[in-house]
Length: 70
Image 1 (cartoon, rainbow, N blue to C red):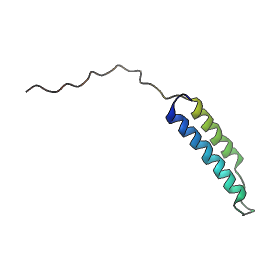
Image 2 (image 1 turned 180 degrees about the horizontal axis):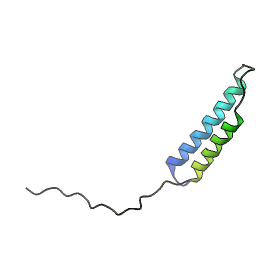
Image 3 (image 1 turned 90 degrees about the vertical axis):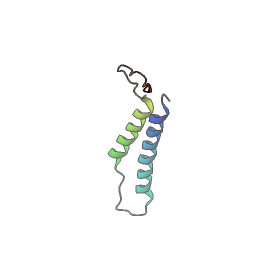
């Protein structure tokens, strides 16, 4: 876990993907099918987000603002 924000987004993506697949399996409608491709893509994206780290700014730092003198 390199960054909390991206890790939580990755875990959320995985949970949503698995939840959607489980809903399609257990909804009681035999005509509903699990979209395996979309589930795998979402889980893969979640894994990528967990492995990623947030970008750090690389540009020059701006000077701190100063209060105007009266």
